[in-house]
Image 1 (tube, rainbow, N blue to C red):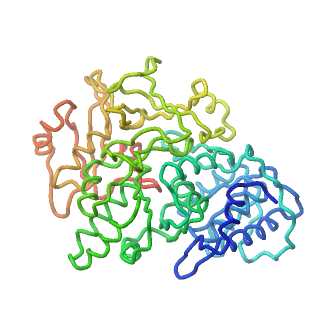
Image 2: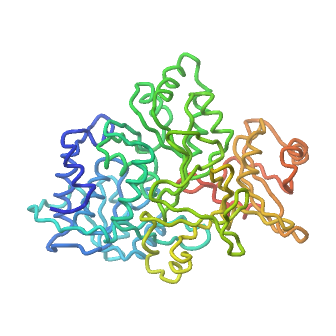
Image 3: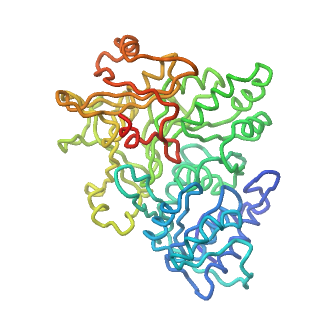
Length: 495
C-alpha cells in the first residue's frame, strides 16, 4: 500500500461523494479504485516510475482527479497541461519537463495526438487502452518530487516549479487549518487546473477533508447562480475578475430573480478571493450585495499560500492579512535591511515546509531566488497595523518615478471608483525627466467617453500624492492570462 496521505485519508471517506460533475456523482471509493487501476496502466511493466514526468490533459472533473492520483500512486511527477494552450506552449511544457508519457481523455486526444507523434512520446487515452491486471503500487516517500507547474513567464520563458509531496501536504494542511475546512463542505470548481489556485486551494483541500467538489468545464454565471440559489455550496473561491462579473450579472437581474441567489451566497460559511489583487471597491460592493465579507489571501506557485485575512477576525479590504500557519514571512528593503517597522515597503520573503523544491533544470535561477533559505517572491508589500498590503510585482507593478516608488495596484484601486470605469490597468512608461510616468488603460461603460484631462481633474485630490496619468488608452478588453490577471508586459506594447 502506498504511503500518500491524500490517498490513505480518502479511504476513510468511502461512499461519500468526492466529485459531482453535471448530474453524475463519484465517491471517494470510486476515485481510489479508478486511480489504482490507471496507475497500473501507467506503470506498464515497471514497478515504480521513479519520478518520471507524466503530463496529463483533462477538464475539471472525475477524470482529472483520477489521472492526478494515478500518476502520483505510480511514482510519477504530474505535469498538468493547460486546456486552452496552443501547440507551441504545450510543446514547450512537454519538452522542457522531459515528459515520458501523456495521458488524456478522448475529448482532448486530438489536441495532443499529432504533437506526441512528432515528439515520439507515448499517448494514453483514458478508456481506449486495454485494461491490465492491477499490480502492487510503490511506496511513495514524502520527499519525492510530485508536481511541476509552469509559471506565467511574464519576463522570460515559463519556469517549471517543482513541489514535493511534502510541500503539497504542507500547503493543504495550512489552508485546512486556517480556513476551517470541514468534511461536509461543498465547493464549486471552475478555475483552471494547471494553476495552484484550483489544484491546491480547491480540489486538494476538499479531497483531503472528505468534502465534495462540483466541477464545471468553465465559468458561466447562469449555471453557478442556479446552484447557489439551490444552496449547493458552503465554500466559494474565485479570482477578482469573476467577482466583478458576478456583481454585474446580479445587478442585471430583477429583485425577484436575484433574491434566492443572494441568499445562497449569504448562507455560505466562507468566500475567498485570490490570484490577483482584489480592489477594495469590489470587496465593498460584494459585501453590500450579499453581506459576505470576502477573505483575501496571497500566494504564488512557488510557495502555495503565504498570507491570509483570518477566517475568524477582521477581513480588511485591500489587505492580504497575516502569515498562515507553518509560514514565516519577512520584508526586506532594497538596501538589504530587514524591516521591523510598519509602513516601510519591502520585498516579501517566505520560508516554510510548503515552499517549493527547485525550478526544473534551472539551478542558477533557483539559487538566485533564495536569500539564505528565504524565497524571494519579487512582490513588494507594506505592513499597516499588523496586516500586509501588497503593492505589486517589483518587475511590473512598482513604478519608479522621480525617486518615489508608486504602486500601480493602489492607483488602479482608486481609478475603479470612477463611475465610468469598469476595469483598468496602470503601468509605468519611460520618461526622460521622471524615469517613469504613470499610464492607464481603461475599459468604460457602454457608449461613454472619458478624456484624459477629465480623469486628471477627477483624480487630482484622490491621487494627489501620485504622478497623475500621463497617458490614457481606452480598450474594449485588457489582455489577460489564463488566471484572469492582466498581462502588463503585453499591455505596455500598446502605449
